Amino acid sequence: MVQTRSRLATERMHVSVVRVERRPKPSRVKSSRVKFCALEGDLRVEIEADSEDDARLLCQEAGLDFIGLCDD
Image 1 (cartoon, one colour):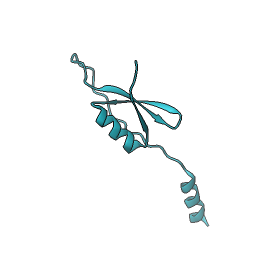
Image 2 (cartoon, helix red, strand yellow):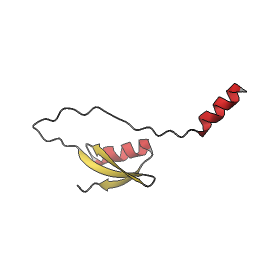
Image 3 (tube, one colour):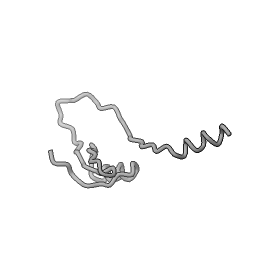
Image 4 (cartoon, one colour):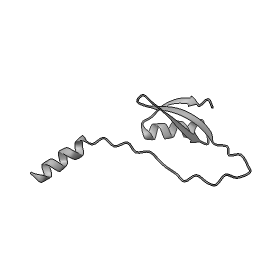
């Protein structure tokens, strides 16, 4: 009975995983990373990546819908 309950609880859980990395200390040389926008359902998400290809790949891995460059 306990195994059945724990299995049901696990199946009902919805988990969203986001890749997090440590940001390096700012340097005097401007970083080449660019901000891109994506959607997670109705939520707009900003992604920093080195290129559009990297941003698209990250969106694909995370299950996000890629939009394009973000306006500051």
